[in-house]
Image (cartoon, rainbow, N blue to C red; front, side, top):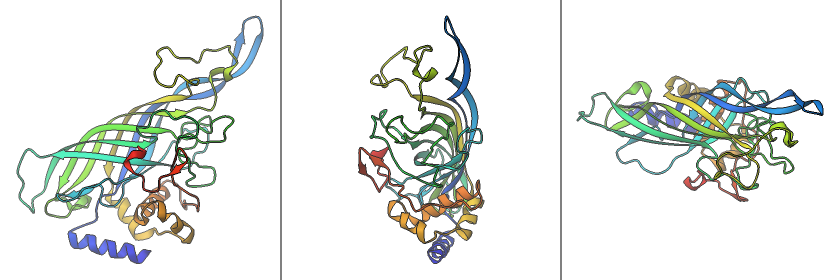
Amino acid sequence: MKKLMIAAAAAAMVGGAFAADVYDYKASVKYVDMQKKVIVIPFVGKAQMDVKVVKSTTLSGYLVTSPECGCLDEASSGAVHGFLVIRNPKSTGDKGVKVMPANLLVGWWSNKIVDPGKKATFDADGYLFAGLGKQAVPAPGAYPAYDFGDPTTKGTYKMMGAYNMIEPGSGAFIEAWLDAAGFGKVAFGDESIGCAIGHEVCLKNLAGSVIGGSWLCAQNGNGLGYLDDAYLCWGWNTATPKLMEVISGTWSIKANQKVQEWIEANVDLNTAEQALVANSTAETLILVKGAAQQMAKGWTLTNKSITPTIGGTPDNSFATTWF
């Protein structure tokens, strides 16, 4: 495997430099969590209940794209997918690394003509869909189900607190989601972020707003009827009580060539991890593993399926229809 990476590195050097496939990710968000609180019930007395509260946190880590996503020449095309590798330091549940399948869509434009061999910066805009992406609110059994990382981490399991976990009675994990849009820059012919001199551009950064949702395994007040947990305006998911709660805030990504070069020089897949390659590319999974090790030393992929399951049908390709 290392030989493959060395060969890939050599090929990149011929073109001028590495491609940009690792980005620093940061999101400052508000989200809904639950905490235990003593509530006074008229004519009954005091009772301890789980109640909803709004919290703030910073999600940080890395966006890993599939090879050649962040650097495209004029002839490149096709859908490519990656992973958001992040951690919430304020999570009251599992504090480990979280991994979300992600889809980065970026456009750019130039208002001036630049000769080959020259450097320039152009405007860009883009979307980042992670986790559930743009699916409708799922019915039970219709959401992605997969294990990834250490045995207690199912995708973004407990990312937004201890109540962000499985659906009661089913034992099924319901994935969170983070969708984002923003504006930024691309670099033309800038080797410092992995762009070869010539007709090639690389994404430098994006920043903007993020919206998302996370599943809570309990209703406000544990559904005892004493506290309200209902809709004011319907139209989202009226079949069941509202358990998918809002995530909202700002986000940014920035190309990190230094981390990427460290990963490509030091990280490889062990025998058990190579079994996961069927569900993604070896290069992408190496980047995921290395990005996670920046936050948790010694972190490894496990020999578990990371195949997202949609309605019971595995999708090994991370096709655009999954988002």
